[in-house]
Length: 378
Image 1: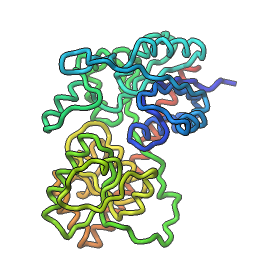
Image 2 (image 1 turned 30 degrees about the vertical axis):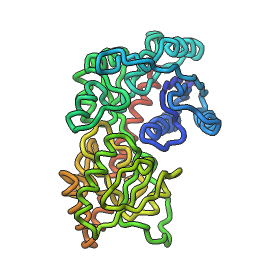
Image 3 (image 1 turned 45 degrees about the vertical axis):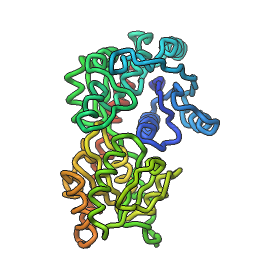
Image 4 (image 1 turned 90 degrees about the vertical axis):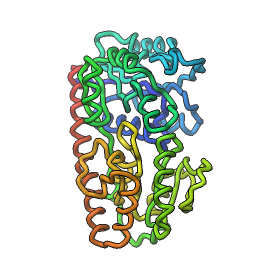
């Protein structure tokens, strides 16, 4: 009997709880691979800490093995005005990964984020070295500044990003547009592996749900892109007092002084709490890169979603409600949603069909990655 392929996954982000987009992506990828017979071992480099409950959840989920590695403090940026590629991935972590790989004889080692690519350096030629990029980090700070935002989290130069990509035998992009960009930055093959949570509306019973607390709602973290988008939406909604909306998530911890006075749900432990509270989900994202996880999560929940073109970047969206040019246009779509039952029904149907198309695409992409791992094991 052929043995199942074995993969060691290295991540600076915990997979549990899935209370932010990158964590949801990491857990979903593991779930898809394990469902296809891949044995997944997980090393969490605990840059964001780890509670006993998190450790227990990850130990139970990653049946191939779980390792918790305390982080090393980051001193200062290794380049003028930007992080050097390896600033957030110390040499001792690469050594630890190399030892685990030698002991486990993995068929592949996958790191999440290009700035963790140093961890691939000790992996022998017998294993497939994979980077799941999540996003584009080369000149990310310049893109932020073009939109009037202070760059945050990790950003580096395109040259440093390319140096990291060169450490891989396979690069994963989260959507096709970024795959095209990465092919210009990497000599390694680039495969798209999107993200779509399980479609809960396929199994949930509609029943007699209570009426939503607000017609529209937004759920988000407090990163600079989200804050800028919500402020732009607030500015437009301040001139439309007839439109009520609800704000939820970590972003509510910030004192944004919003003139449109949304109802506040606050941080939620489970996104379902938010989805039950609103009739239609908003994503006013302007700019940004990567796939907008909050968009696909709302689609998977079965709710109608209104958003900008940037909010649906990388998705095969066709409905006008999935392509507002800006926040002013988004507010007009909210007005149309409020006054037209036909528009509401059409948006709801289009949102569910988009979720189904995306789920089918992600399943095919996961099949392709699992086949590559199986071939390597053989």
